[in-house]
Image 1 (cartoon, helix red, strand yellow):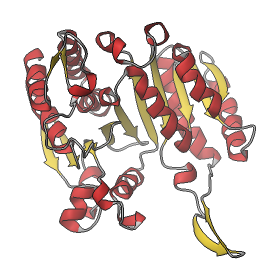
Image 2 (image 1 turned 135 degrees about the horizontal axis):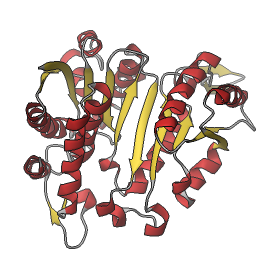
Image 3 (image 1 turned 90 degrees about the horizontal axis):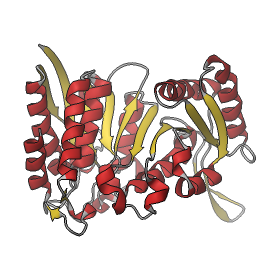
Image 4 (image 1 turned 120 degrees about the horizontal axis):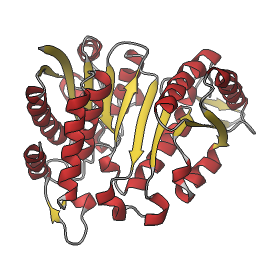
Length: 357
């Protein structure tokens, strides 16, 4: 029987609640499909600050690097907003990505038929949407040097550096090309090459790689136009390739096509070693501990972990099918509630998912 070591990072806010649901489902589905999951919980974010004073303890990073996959729930709380930036929960997440060398973030956006009317966009605009955002995760303006604040000419100035090397562009573009080859064969690279030198480099490197992927239709789009096109005609997209900053923004916009950010999973991958799998939503501290959280994105992140990280596609299918069946039966958490449906809390939704399995 195959054995996989999985580090669970419940984190903050609703994180522990949705982690509990996902863990119970993973235990059932692994038993049914005859493999063993060995779980280890570690602190990160605000919970780690409370227990250790650091948002990413060294022991957490080492455990994650030694695992087969990492399943993260959520981090962050307004309680820590007054701390220096290097001590905030979000810095722990950035450090985890960098420490595990996770440079490729994958965010699938697919319309669930049972939830099509939950979107703020018209049915005829979003019906059939199925796209993947491939975002570079460890470069760009979030990590570029120099950065900081200084006094100059009697004024204060803040500055950050947007920078990419050719090799950084090549490795994320390779991921996007390979994913496009497994999907519908269309790749749209997003940049701001009409203004930014770094974007012109990005575009040039993508064009240089394209001949090696002859079956892929490659296009380029400025980021402002891409933001508009996502709400005008999202069906035109198959795979969107973006840098760190642009992908951060566009992936959240794309997430809302589905009607709720509470439905979307993501994966962060490196060249080798374990991947990090997490819902795209935040820690929702306003509803933490109230049994109101939507666990679906966490469950679907667990399915991505099974499929991509642990190579257990049948078990991944079982989790995804359970989500579809529960939604088709009319069960909803508060963020998805619609007329004629039955509203459930996080715990009860977990029970319905277990029944569907």
